[in-house]
Image 1 (cartoon, helix red, strand yellow):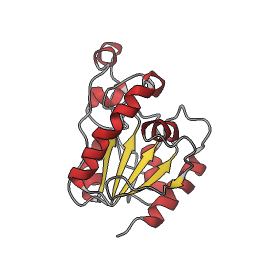
Image 2 (cartoon, one colour):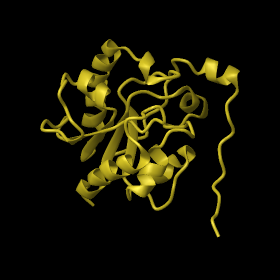
Image 3 (cartoon, helix red, strand yellow):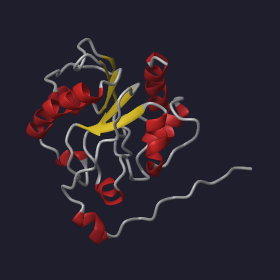
Image 4 (cartoon, one colour):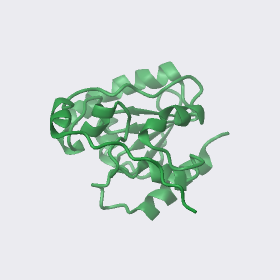
Length: 188
């Protein structure tokens, strides 16, 4: 028998509109194995106060299928993710309807903030979930998916595709394979 997980209620149009440009606090603590770095929070995430909050985002099923989590988490299971040694931050900490609303200047300005976060919390690896955001933010226009040659404040850097449902270039099996490669590289 399959046990269904509860879903989160859909925010109203008014709640989503009010969430425009709102931040979502980083999910961090010392000793992280991996700090996952998104492009920026969605409006849905800002309403509920949890990263990757939109049910259409594929991060949570991909993390489970790639071996990071023992079951498929909901965004509200963030404390359990943290307990497993994984955290979440963003290049730009302001909510938008789509990542296309984030300007290149914002990505470049987000890099120093992210460096400070990495210096403060010292994760072993930093996994960027968005090719273009990393390429622009860290001036690496030719960066490819996988481990990066330059660390971020002493932490290994890894580049992965954005798990957003809007990213049609990568389907779930592709994401699971690529995220699984990162999982295999994560020190226990």
